Length: 219
Image 1 (cartoon, rainbow, N blue to C red):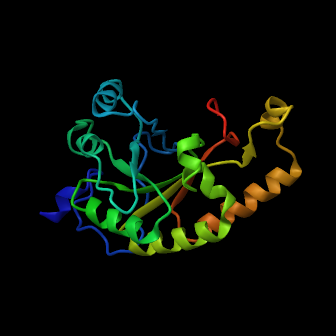
Image 2 (image 1 turned 90 degrees about the vertical axis):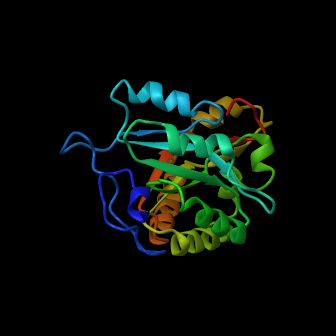
């Protein structure tokens, strides 16, 4: 039964591609939802189980599925979709910038019990941003517009985005000071960017309130 793919208490059939659905309700009525932010190599099946035994968040997000020409959904991340045992919704996070293969992966993931698709635009690791993915995407507004539009159109139900508040290049003398600085111009750019993301049809934007320091291990 295709309705079994949904883990949020809603037994209706999944929506068509491009058709949004409301975000999962918080467990405590009248409160804002809590979400367990993913961390690569940490948010595993076992980690979700441990957190779930301690009441847990309103929903989880997986480690990111790497998407490229020859990628397939990583088995250990699929395991966290199938065997987390928390009874809570789980969003599948993707990282990539190759639009056709992002679409291909979204379709592949529909056979698993996902609550929605989340796009990673926050990871600043050198091996990530150099491929123009994760936090590296923040340097390429045109690519973001293309990717968001297509992903929204191809995603049945919920589509969310995780992002940083901006980017910096590592190597400056006052890097630590620059990381901490957030002036009016930064704020205006962030607001414009958030409006563009929501305008593209994202159901929610999860903001990691730090700048992505591209080229630095500790960012």
